[in-house]
Length: 143
Ligand code: AMP
Image (cartoon, rainbow, N blue to C red; front, side, top):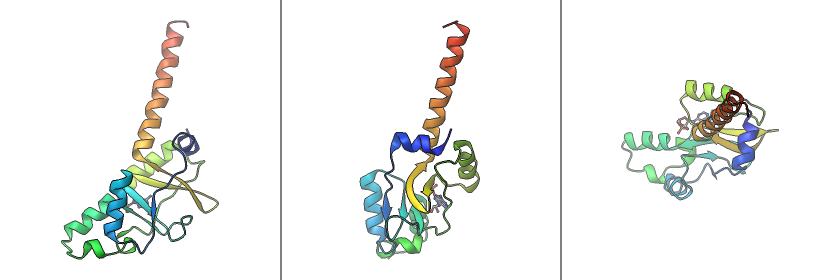
C-alpha cells in the first residue's frame, strides 16, 4: 500500500507553525488541534523543521524557566525525514521504527502535500489485514 492511499482517506491538511512562533503558541496549537507534532514552515509550503511533543518534553527536562518564550526554531528538528505520495507504507514503518519518530511530512515536487503519523499507518495496516481476512474467509467458505 502507498502513502497516497492514506492521504486519499485523511486529506492533505498539515498543522504548521512558523520558525519564530513561541513555544507558548506551539503548545496551544498542539492542544487545540489534538496533534502530536507541527511542521515548521515560514511559507506554509517548504519545510524548515518539525517540532513534536517530545521536543517540548526535552525542553521541560532542561528546566529552562524561559521555555515558553523560546521559539519553535530553537527546539525543532531541522533535519526532517520526508516521504513522497509514492512511498510504501512498509518502507515508512521501517524508517519510523529505526529513527524513533512518529510523524513524516509528505512532499511532492518540493511542496508539502500531507503528513502521516504512526497512527495513520497502524490504521491502514489494520484495514489491509481485515480485507485479507475477509477474502480468506470468503475463499474457505466458497462465497
Ligand atoms: P515524534 O516521535 O514524531 O513525536 O518525534 C520524536 C523526535 O523526532 C522529535 O525530536 C522530533 O522533532 C523528531 N522528528 C519527528 N518527526 C521527524 C521526521 N519526520 N524526521 C526527523 N525527525 C523527526
